Length: 433
Image 1 (cartoon, helix red, strand yellow):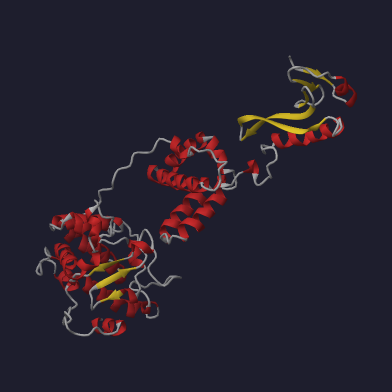
Image 2 (image 1 turned 45 degrees about the vertical axis):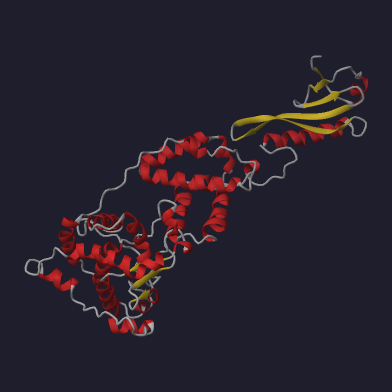
């Protein structure tokens, strides 16, 4: 039977006859309000299209009550309220939260930051990258429902294109990786989010590994650039970055108690990946000389801060914060030097596995997981470190590069006796410096 349409009143509904099949009588004054007539009951209903963010999801129906239990006037008032909620994008019977009844991007980001990243000890630099992506590149989305992106992945595609154009392809890809991780994390506790991650809709920008590392023949000219820097502590910082292959962020946070000259180690308690990835860097002789020079310059330049940090500075934190240099002054710094270390290690004949251990990379293969790194530190890995460091200084000529030779060989390193008892850390560093 086709739906009927008339002004619904108590009298008009009382006259409706029951039928073998259910049929609807729609109110001619209030669209979406109708009575469903069955064999035994006449039920007041409200029906509306459920939209969110311009996308029609489904048709929602709300049961208002049975004729006889409530009046038509009461049912009409309930219908107006239900239809108003549906028009606002709220599911019938769902308590309103934010616009659209879903977790916002800001809430999802804060939960991911607090419950996932900080709780698992993620590096402060990693957290800062996520914060930059969320609070700068997605700032205008923060208070919008995260579900909107799931239902309209074209918005994510458009934003990826926009960031690519304005900020570059690498930053655009990085921002989308952050958004993808936050969405996946939020969906674990918000089942109303669409299952498909909207980031899957983008076409990723092609990324090329930056081949900015130096080979053995490039080191001499770079050392001359480095020696010309005005700040001797920054000079030692960049040299230590090359000699250790360390990430610059980890070196900036080296405290005096992390240095064990007697054991010829620097402890990195919280590298990229968090405390679970903590490791020790074995020290070659050139690295020890670099540390000693840094300690001496720290005493002169920053007497207060040098008590705590290997690379002190006049900053709020007390240590070196910004390591970038003018490329016209120093052509290679930061991760350029980490790539250079990897290249020099290969040139020195160091095995792939040892390079992974020295750079604290994840070990490839199942069998490599059985290697106990600490057992290799004292002799084997330190010897490999020495081979890499020697490539940095071996091509220097005392007649051609007297200043560089004097700089890199100016501190005498006294090898501790194997059976000697280790002194306190403060005494050891005091003697060395």
